[in-house]
Image 1 (cartoon, rainbow, N blue to C red):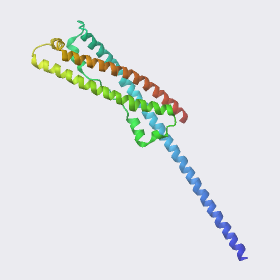
Image 2: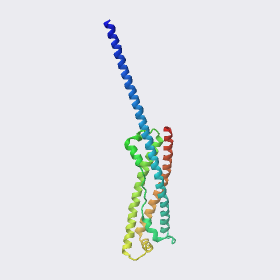
Image 3: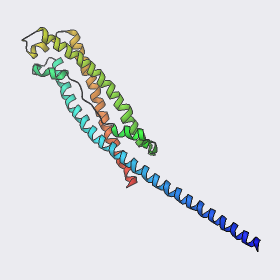
Image 4: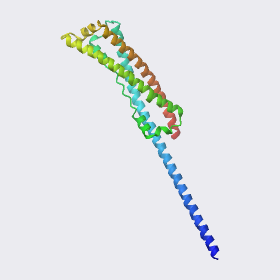
Length: 221
């Protein structure tokens, strides 16, 4: 009798343990599902933010392309001594490119670790090409142009200070007689041509990345 009672208690205890284990496993599974759903939601949100950044970037790149092409055509005409060029406006050509791309979405996703969940190798490669390679090269080229433009402006301002009452056209004509100034202007033009070519490449990559993100997001609809 005692033995039967002990056996029943033992079976009951085993049953209780099994139920507890099953409950724990179910709770863990639910927690994993919730965590997975949360990660997917963050991933989708971060991709959408990057996509919005890309839209803003495309406007910035296009603006720089339009202005850059115009400025380079006027610079080239000036170097070719085209008399139709408005030399009084050439001081504006001594400016610098204004390329400020928005990589906040990419950096935020990278810092949170969201990007490690990317299984699409194509998306991963284009993200790295755009945000790491292309932007860094553009920044380096932009810094070179800024330095060169600053030197050109220094020439112009010094010439203006030394020739009070002289028009901008005359100042630019006088500067063009100086070999160092002409060399700086040609160097600046070459650097701007290089960065314009890169802007064109970046715009193509921008469009490609945006389309790749759209394709990736379809998997989560």
